[in-house]
Image (cartoon, rainbow, N blue to C red; front, top):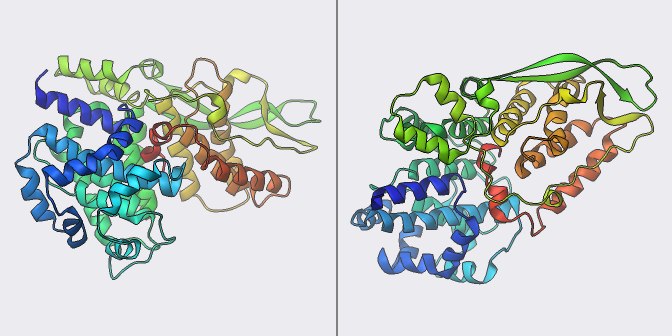
Length: 437
């Protein structure tokens, strides 16, 4: 394999977090930043604070693919560290070296915050921790990497994170996101066009971007793309079951019925799919869709069950914790990518349906299917981020109900505490972060 192909393979590993994230952090702490200072510019701090992207582009233009990838890794590491510090935890994972290196960028927290304000200085909803990390990521990821394929996707991720911090939607960020997404979808030389197995991953990420902006037409369009690529259908049906501890007869309960194509339900390794795409230039769209569904199957580091956010059981004298269906097999076993698709549909219905007393009942089957993955044989263990998101959403829904409000408060406390734990390790959390945040 030639050097350029090796670099592109490494880019794919970065995008899917198959490259051990901790090793990226270690390299970052062990002077990746110093590499940028020595081999790119001796005055990075001035470039960042003055936002001299054109000057930065001139500097990296003469670098080869491997050198450009080394620079890009600084932007990726900075972005992921920022997310870890502000959302996923654990905080201060590498306080000594990382902060020492960043201190050489001569800009204080107040100045960094000001530089991140947009559109007549839209304020932050909450002042972020270590905004210098996002500022550095924003600058480095905005470079023109002529030998690399993945920077537009990383820029889109960075812009989404930036928007998530702001009190109001920024039209400036939105227009940049639109431009990047159109490039990735339409440009025949983009990473998405060259690696079609990444399509489902991309659309799942874009779905959550549009959710942030609340653009219903875009959300609906992307949701159709996701379900088309996935080749699955989800419908609410009636199934016999019991809802209370004292119920003697099974009666009709809502159940989420999920149907897949046979090829979709098979566990396919992403590397196998990639190799097949390289060897076969012509494949039918149906095969492409089936293969695409499993592009998120690989979990970089599956933590033990005890590392997942704890699911607080309902302690009620009447109501069961979950509906006890007469046919327990009615809850399907889902692969990692299928979990993300079901979660996207859950969030879609939650965000687009009116808030009324029936909302919890409509969403409960989705919640039960996802939380039920912990006990399903043959499926993938529920992803950390999906479990966190489902438990958080359930807590919000249950906060208005007399029998569940106590569980709601206890669950939120459990979720808050899970962000300060040292396990699971960073890449386990970040693995599906962009497809469910």
